[in-house]
Length: 426
Ligand SMILES: [Ca+2]
Ligand SMILES: [Ca+2]
Image 1 (cartoon, rainbow, N blue to C red):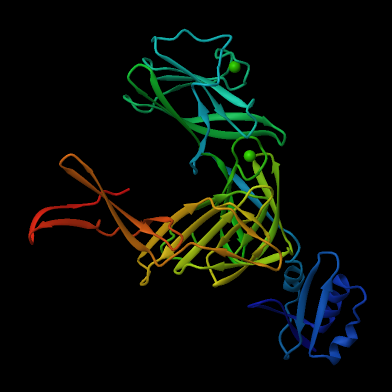
Image 2: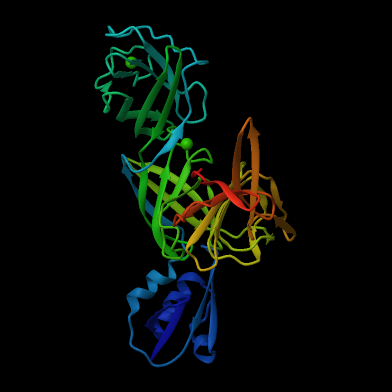
């Protein structure tokens, strides 16, 4: 005799009756296999993993027993191995050339006289920085990779600008001693000087860990970009690769990292462990105290919420007017609105504090419909117009995705056109 068992919506696997009893006794030792024969539907409770699976007994079907053991195990924590990639990302690091005194004990002989010394901060510890010195005339950057304030004792620590005019240094590889062991990071640094004194520097981290995962009911690219301390916290970033659920969103989505993720209605506790150069992510399904977020605006196609203090990072792109979310304080909001017809999207980012309490309702006063707002400023004989898209909470939106022609302004006097112009982007 054969049975059919469905342990996961939309994913039916076929087994025989012997295997049903085997699976049942494995997950619920008190389960009596014979009872299953008398009932049309039996629920198996897994005490160890805390999950519930429904077993539906239906028609005579062909056996495929091995698949069942795998399906039954799916509510176990999911484990993903993400590979280190050196140059996929672009996450800014704090860099300081003014207030942090980097007094090197030993420096190379520079070619020029204009030298910029500074600190690139990795992680959230203010003591944890990488010192560097830039010799502007030579277009060279010296990096104190081992952090001993000696710029002459680090192998492979001199970088030449990739641009003959600007100071742009790429592919700075570091082996960082972190609490999670020695980990690889790759940075790019740019230094701009205006005149003799004003110097502006940027540092981005381009390395991270990336893999394909099945989370929130969808297979997708998932990456973690760590800011250099080997600990994954909300100072870091997650990157979700594009899915086909939103046509406009054909780019990678950066969201604040967290050890708790709520992805399209699925809550996970995440833990991270570095194994050699890989990052192993464990995602355990979790049940959380929930509240309701009322979306007051319309046309919201994607919502990202995040917070500090172990808050969930929420990414939702299938939205209800009343949305169940884990209770918590969310002080980071990002919204994408999709215009009717779906060819133009609008993006906003805000930092309101929204508290969602268990069993209670909270309001998100953001979203469409958008209003056009036109303001002007007069300076002498010149009028400068500004145009903004405003949401229901007064938040401003930028158009993204398909670029439409910029709005035009035409000025008339006594019915006669005297001036016209288009808005610049930004
Ligand atoms: Ca050194
Ligand atoms: Ca970190």
